[in-house]
Length: 454
Image (cartoon, rainbow, N blue to C red; front, side, top):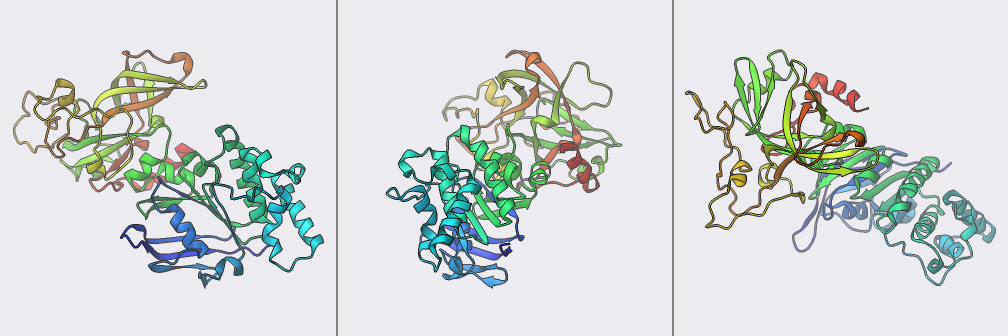
């Protein structure tokens, strides 16, 4: 049995010569035998972190230890660290067997042992019948299996994978995801896996670590990171379709709390466990994140149900279900407000500087909370005075469309232009402050909320 090791990352920072901060004061622990996935967009520092763990790069500050020993340039050989890259890095003039056995050539291994290890690794990856072929005669998926077999032939204690499936056809990717996760489990090897694909992270990981601009946003089991995100970035990055991120203003009114979305409002009754905590945030502007599974279509809402109305913009038929996108008149949270830099579908072009804002842009403009002691002006979109106006906070910035998405059976999918009523599951309502951090107002119901997602 291979000795299994743990990885500890403490205060790790990597600053390149041009001043780029690739990894920023990062703390993370990978348990022995754990399959940890580093998830984040391109340029977030995932691959740099992997190289720091491997000892290929030196940190600016902080340290990495493997089984309590600091990582240095001698670590890869001493701890039998194996890396797999997205470009396979196979020798084209060598056969599959020769590529797999290449790491053993420099070691003091007898030829019979080398042949036995090659056969064992090939059997683990299901490529025993390809040993005499050259890489040029293999498919992308087969080449990646050869690269994996070459990595495990040394019986590593740590396996580092840098987006190994990025060059594999989509049809093969799902199969390889399962095989890699199963292989790491059978070998009981501590694994760090880098990807920007949330499907890979959610299906393969024991734990997911989400990175943004070199900063660790959150680490935890996939189901926890999905259902209980710490930041608006995590909420937006994980989940298909992406959740709606809408600006809202909190208004406390006669024991109830209203989340004013501009044209509509979500009212939390006095007996709701979240009401008291939100009432203390009277007039604050927040981001409301609504996932598709927090919404459901209803014909006639029952008393006490919190609802939104929306006009269908488009319908995506996925065969087993349909994703319906609706315009609820909400104002999409801007990048500056949420500190979130992600490409957003459906963003509207900014009007020319000298053009008056058309009605649609007026409706999609930002929310500004106004404290009022008198009744709200008759021009307010809702009775609470938090109505969209053009505040000029970011001149020329295109405003994101404030649409929401809901899943429906294909047989009951609506048509564009139809109006639907959506029930909102308050247990799955996610709120974030101006810094993009989670507003936690009902801690004792977090575990119950996670059970709802299981």
